Length: 208
Image (cartoon, rainbow, N blue to C red):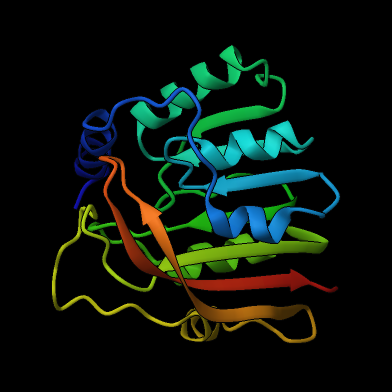
C-alpha cells in the first residue's frame, strides 16, 4: 500500500483522538530510563508525544518521528507551549522509506505496529546501529489486544521480545540484550476505559 494510504490512516487515527495538553509517557519508558544520564534520544512512532516531552523535561534532546502530520504538528505545538521547543524536534517520516540520521544514546519504539507493510526487523536493526556505544534501544510491543486498539483481529499473534531480538540478528559482540520479557499492567485507553494488558519488552545495549 502507498505512503499516502498510510499517512491518511494514521492522520485519521490521531485526528479522531482529542489532543492532550499533557500526554502521559509510557510506563515502560519511565521505569527503564529513570536514572540514565540524559543525552540524545530518538522516539520512533512518537504518537501524541508523551514520551518525547517526558524525556525533554529530564534533560534529553529528543528527535521524535511519526508518519502522521497530525501527530507531528500537535507535538511541535505542545513542545513550544511547554517551553521545550529547544529540546524536542518532531519530524514527519515514513520508516518504510528512510530512517532518521544521526547517532543516539537512547532509541525508543513503543507499539510500532501498523496495518501497512513495514519491515520492522530492518527498522529495529537500523535503530540498534544508530546507538552510540553504551546507548540503549527500548522496544515495547503489544503482547495482548486492548479494547481500544485499532487492530481487533482475533487471529493476531504477538511475537515475544526474544523473537523480536532474534529477527534483528544482532551480533552479541556489539549488542547485549539486557531485558526480554512480558509484563502485565492495568492501562487506560484514549476514551478513559481501563484494561489489563501485556507488554513485550526488549532492551538492548550497544557495548562496542
